[in-house]
Each structure stands twice: as C-alpha cells, then as structure tokens.
Length: 146
Image (cartoon, rainbow, N blue to C red; front, side, top):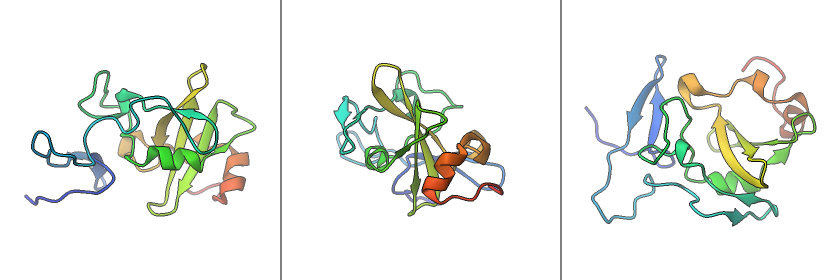
C-alpha cells in the first residue's frame, strides 16, 4: 500500500481494470483540494455563462452516484475555455492539455451549466462518438481512434 495524493482528483480510476481509488481524506478542518463540491454556488464564468457544480459528481456529497464521473477541482477554469457545439447546443466541450482529457458540460435548461463527464473516468469515460465532429474540429481532436 502506498500513501500519495493525486493533485486534481479526490477519487479516480487506475489500471486496465479501471479500479476506483480514493485519496486519503485530510483531517477535519483542513483546506485540502480534494474535498467538497468544486463550485458550490452559481458563478458567472469569464465566458459570460453561469456555472455550478452538480454534487452528484463529488464523492461523499448528496446525490453522488458510483456511475457518475468525478468532477475535477479546476472545472470552472475548464468551463471558461469550453466551446459550444452547433450540432448539440446544450453541450460544451474543452480539451485539457495538462491531462490530455476532453471534458463535457451540459446546460440544465435554466441557463446554468454543469460538468458532465470526461475521457479519463475509467468505465464511465466519454468516448469519441459522444463528442460532435464540429467540436472535434474546433479542439483539433482526431475524428477516430479514441
């Protein structure tokens, strides 16, 4: 057993079998990055759109589900850089060059956007077919093979 912490994810998948592992929880009262909901309150992002985390994507929060991907701590920064899809206007996407990960965001129908998945979530990962071709073009992603 090894004790270490992955910086951006409190819970994440490892290995070919996509085993869900969990960072060690800090002591109560500490200000560690891995705990809680990344963006608790509705916030206007620098792109002018409203954003708020959905607690179902934060382990240990009300409504969290094992089949829901884990929202990264930097989701607001990722959303700031997201692009819209003409073919799926209720979705936005971004590519995180630091982790080589595509992230998807959904509009809840009330004008608030939420993180809703990425390509690094093990068995729950987005696949290439879920990313529209117009978005792949904008983000310079390959059309096939991922």
